[in-house]
Image 1 (cartoon, one colour):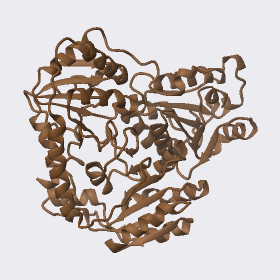
Image 2 (cartoon, helix red, strand yellow):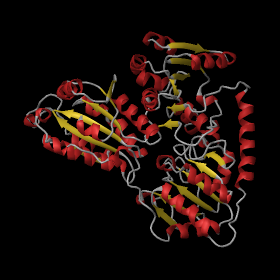
Image 3 (spheres, rainbow, N blue to C red):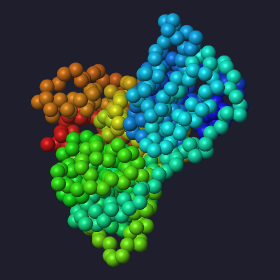
Image 4 (cartoon, one colour):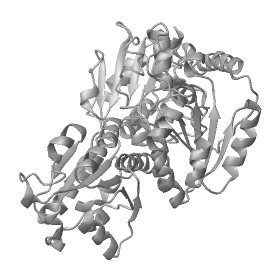
Amino acid sequence: MRSLEAHGVRHIFGLCGDTTLPFYDAMHNLDHNITHVLTRDERSATYMADAYSRVTGRVGVCEGPSGGGATYILPGLIEANESSYAVLSITTDISVASYGKYPLTEVDQEALMRPLTKFNTVIKRADHIPRMVRQAFRAMTTGRSGSSHLGLPYDIQYDDVPADDIWGDPKHQTYPAYRAAPEPGVIEAALEAILTAKTPLIVCGGGVVIAGAMDELEKLASRLDLAVATSISGKGSLADTHPLSLGVVGSNGGTDETWEMMEEADLVIFMGCRAGSTTTSRWEAPKPGQRIVHFDNDPMTIGANYPTEVGVVADLKLALAEANAYLDARDGEVPAFGGAVKVADIKERKFARFRELAKSDAELIIPDDAIVVSDPGTSCPYYNAYSQQKHPGRQYITNRAHGALGYSLSAALGAWFGRPDSKVVAMMGDGSFAFACGELETVVRSNAPITYIVFSNSNFGWIKASQYADCDKRYYNVDFNRTNQAAVAAAFGLKSWRVEKLEDLDRVMKEAFAHEGPTLIDVICQPLEEAAAPVRRWMG
């Protein structure tokens, strides 16, 4: 507890168990400023820690007991690690003295967590605790941020720790910590490559927002009149309303209109983006012959999928600041690439098609500072494609690395604890709702004024739509019975509505947003396979 305090920890999300008795007793007896949030599922605890980390730039901390608790915590750990967010998982364990004696809940936690984390260990001696906590925070907050795991056996929780070894580096309380600058000459090489292009395009991933490099990006893009597209995780690199913000590109939330610029670009600048399958629509573009410049703080991403003309390995905030300084000092005029005119034309055509499909003029206004959390299913492609975030930064959260259902219901609570003054809205399908609805009790107990929107179509919509598109409408085992999600939420203590008519939705949304406590809207909607969802492989 003192080591966590020394690293600025303010919240812990977790669930009690037999092996956590000494840890919980310490939380009870010690005078500290850490709030422990009791969850109803270890998966939920990790998702809360993940979203908390995303909106605060601090390490999110979750905990759980041995055995089943340790296995349930895995999905959130790998999501945070692969999405580059700093999450510390503490799982208590059976006593070291009982290893190999077939005690209840024995599992090799170190082997279990190794492939999912950036740093991982089961601590065998109490006097090692402070240095292992420091190492975990060092790993999570430096370089490419990610998750860590500390196993804490039951018996060592009773042993003494030298007080003079309990300290933490203040730099590791937030991330990125110890930012690394570009190597000499590489920024000049990258910019000179960009300036020789005719139709360059920036594609930003989540790394821009993680680095807090939004202002530097905006300055560079505006100076060169250079269009900026994003991956789903990169949403917020520029405000969606910015004249140079093209929007999301790729197979989920990208549209035919935005894809035009990916195909037409003679040089693509990946910025904190791994150029993975979704953003490139399974590497459909860039195509061979399109030049690549790649900025990232992780050297492993450079050249992983495309031959790269110039790779810049550095913290993005420092790299972009140096790029702007280079342009300030450069002799001669800097070209303008006409990005704003192209973006305006594409957006006009994209939203004209959207207005035809929407069949409604209702303005469902979400507060400008709201945080929107989406599960990866039904709601995700629509929000990716058509939402218009008015400010840069992390205001949209979705779990894009591994796409587990049930994420948004729990993550929304973590986001609220991180930014309690912001309105939090969480969206999901009815399939996702059933994964995690027990956590509504935690939401009510916390009195968190979150609005949940459930899109009910009585099936696992993403898979059914894929069976429609890829399997010639051969549907198999994707439908389930309709449930009244509003009634379920009401039983947990939320104020809830069930909306079956389009004309009622605007009024209900306004009522839900105005309510002081947690709310849920159950929206009966068309099956996803019958909708014109912005998913490229379904629209071909």
